Amino acid sequence: MSKQKSKFREYVEAIILAIVIALFIRTFVIQAYKIPSGSMKPTLQIGDHILVSKFNYGIKLPFLRTTLIPVGAPQRGDIVVFIYPEDRSKDFIKRLIGVPGDTIEIRNKKIFINGLPYSDKHGVYVDNFIIPGAVQPRDNFGPVTVPEGSLFVMGDNRDESYDSRFWGFVSKKDVLGKALIIYWSWNQEEHWIRWSRIGGILH
Image (tube, rainbow, N blue to C red; front, side, top):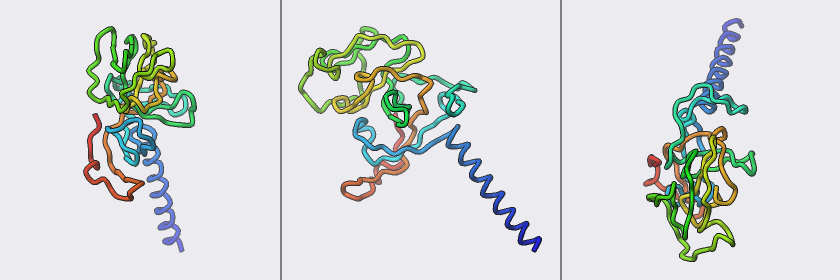
């Protein structure tokens, strides 16, 4: 009987340890996300499953979002996951365009940072129509200066992304991590695996 109890106790302790390790990794090291929308096409497709590093920008206390151990700062061009400012129950993923102190302006779809044209190698435009800034900020925006402690983000699918042009800046405290790799990709409409996307490193 005592042997059975000790075996049972070993199993329980192993399960608890596994849960603690999994929670630690998910909270402080890496987390999986699924892409639900096309705002980051073609970099990320609907149905891509990605791993996001929570360690790149420092170790943060959950909920308080206070950085305990600073590791690095978000850099222009990073693909970041963050808490959506207009609904904090949701996580968004976009590309970082402007860091604190940058002045961002968009003229007829062309991005300018600090008065200079931005080499927008990831941006894709699918609509040739130019919307005046007086109507909405999609194609003509700013200039605005990114405040300290904030970031300016945009989706790679520039004409089909709801981002900082519309709802403003992201607090650096709300950045959850940096997208690293596609570990799984599933085409939900046609029900097939996108084998060629699996293992793709995100830049």
